[in-house]
Image (tube, rainbow, N blue to C red):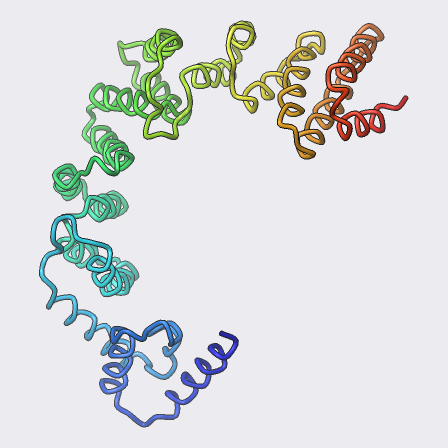
Length: 348
């Protein structure tokens, strides 16, 4: 592989020396780009821009356009190899149309691949960027028609764009109702904030803050599937809300009753002003780290203890901290590395 770069550089220099017409050079490079050996060459046409010049680049894009025009509409559920040819032909044409601010040209390119939900969503986003709201509705409808159960996250992407369309039309209640559906699907903090901000800004009748809280509380003892397999648990979504809204008592009560994300528990420990309140949370986090039974966990646990120590203000708090260290030494005595580093960190 170390030979590839010198060979590619040599090819670019050689092409510059040719006295071919722009059209001939463009056709030659197009054949290299789509002849099956494109991986052997540098980026076409960008690496050859100097040799092509403006006329050659225009001729190369004409080759791309002819290749694109010869393709049929992308078949539904086309395989990757089929899609790959469409992508390679279309992307440079899209880039050129985007540089010219030519939305009709961009949408004409997407028209051929409208059987793919991802492409429909991309076209819809370009409509928003160009404030083509009537076109947006059309592309959202196409995205919905092309939707696949294999990509549920794309449904949420489409719904987010639909919310923007509702807002553009002045249909704030419909926008909020759809945003509520989105939050139920994702349980993400950003979607909750969007929902609450929307309801507050437009003074909507529905109290979505209360609705979200009650829905999460009701779901704490249920075992619903995580949204799309990657969203937060109900308890963590609820704790996130308590944290951003400064509802410290409710956050502490929730953490006392249930297992929560260590990251969120750490955020709560840092947010509590009184070391007496944060100390048990820090110790809970330290135990979690040490129980990972690896050196990184031991170091992270000690770092948490140092953080806690830096917040102590009174003699009783420092005494409680020393007692906690003694308890940890006894509890994790078999973990030799942890005990060694703990003693080094808190020798005094």
